Length: 294
Length: 294
Image (cartoon, rainbow over all chains, first blue to last red; front, side, top):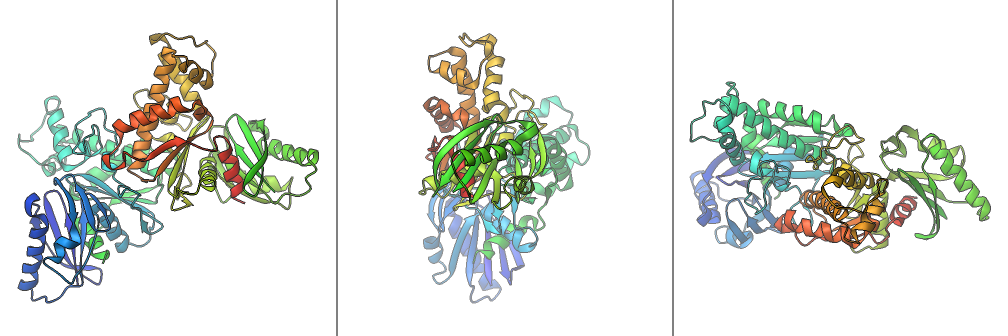
C-alpha cells in the first residue's frame, strides 16, 4: 500500500493506493507554515485510525520545481528549498519517498489509467496551470525541471496581468481558478451578470450554464487561451491527445467544447484532428500518478 | 560518399559528405515544377564532372512534412505528396534515400558537429521558420511529423499578417526572410531609412549595422518574437541550448544579441541561463544532417 499525495495551492489530496487503484481518499487544507508536517501527521493519524501498520512508500505531486526529490520552488504556496526526503523521514524513517512536479504526476496517472496513448499532454487547471508531457511513454522532465510549465507561456498579453512568477501576460493569469475570477472582475462592467461580488471560479462555470452573459464571455476567453496553448503544444511536441484536468476542469463540457471551437481556428492543418478531452481521472490523476512513482 | 541535399524555398544546397565532413558544396535554384528532377540531374552531372562512380546514399532535408521518406507538403514551395524514393530511384536505382524535415536535419547536423549538448533546439530562419528538437540525443519527430514547427506559433497577433499555412499571426510572418521584408514595409512610414523600395532581408541587416532607424526597429521586433518563441520552448521542452541558424541568421551578432536582450525579460526564472547562440555550421547544418541520415 502506497500513499499518493497531490499538493495543491489550496488543498492537499491524499489517496491510499493499492495495486494502482485508489481505495480511499481525503483532503486537508494547504498551510504554508506547516506543509510537510501537516501531511505527515495526517498520514500518521490516518494509519492509526485504519489500523494500517506499514506502508511501502509515499509519492508526492508538487506544484513547482522538483529534481531528485528536492523541491526548489513552490511559487503558488510561497515556499522554497525543501529537502522532502529529510523532512518525511522525521515521521516515516523507513519509507520510500518520491516526488515529481504535480503535472508530471497527473499525466503519469492518466497514462497508467488508459494505456492506448503513449504520447500525451495533461493540462491541469487549478490554482495554477500546469502540464505534464509524456513522449513514448516517458515523462519529459526537461533540463531545468520545467518542461511543460505552460502556465507561464506569455500568450495572454492583451490583458498583461501580473503573474506569481514575476512576468506578465502568462497563460496562468487568465486560465487558472484565480485567472477565471480575475477575468470576470475585469469584464464585469461590460456584461450583464448575476455573479455576486464575492465569487469563485466554480460560480462562474455554474452561472455560465444558466446563460449568464458575463460568465459565458469569461469562459469563451479562457477557452481561447487554452486553445492557443494547445495549438502551440501541437506544433511543438506534437502528441496524440490533450487531457484537461484539475479543479477548473470540473466545469466539464462547456469548457472542453469552447477549447475545441477555438482550437479548430487556431491550429495548424497537420494537427486539426488531435484529441482534446476531459481527463478520465479528474482530480484523482495526481494522487494515482504520485503513488505510481513508488 | 554521401550527398546531403538541403531543399530551401529559394535555393537547394547540395553537399558531398565523406566521414561526416562536407568536402564540397554548391547550390542550385529551387524550381517548383522540376524539383526532384533538377536535383537528380544536377547530382548526376556533378558525379560525371568529378569522376565519382558510386555514392552510398542521398539524404534530404525538406521544408515541410515528411514521414518515412514520403513528403506530404512543402507549403513554401507549393508542392504536395511526393514519393521521394520512387522519384529518386528513376535516376539512382541503387542508392539509399532518406529524408527528414529540414529543421530536424539541421539540428542533427549541429549535434553531430558538437556533441556536448544532447538536448537542443535549432531554429532555422530562412524563407520560413523551422525548429528541430533533440531530446537525449534523439530527434523529436512528433506524431504528425510537425514537432518543432514553431514557424506557426500564433504569437505575432499584433500584426496578424496572413501566413502560407492559412492562419494569421504566425511567428514566420515576421521572423522569416520574407517576414523581415514585410515588417520593414509595414513600418517604413514611421521611421527614417536609406532602404530602397526593392530590398531583401539581407539589406535590412546590412543597413541596421549602419544605424538605419527603420532597420534597427525591424530587427528589434524580429528579435522580440524569436525571444518570445524561445521563452515558450524553454518552458515546454526545456533544453540546454538554442541554436539560431539559416539564411537570416547570417545577420550575426545584432540578431543574437537582440534575442538575448528580449529573452532576459520574457523568460521564466528557472531557465534564464540557457544558451542562445549562432549555429556553428550556419548553412551547412542542413546538408550535414541530411547526409547524417544515411
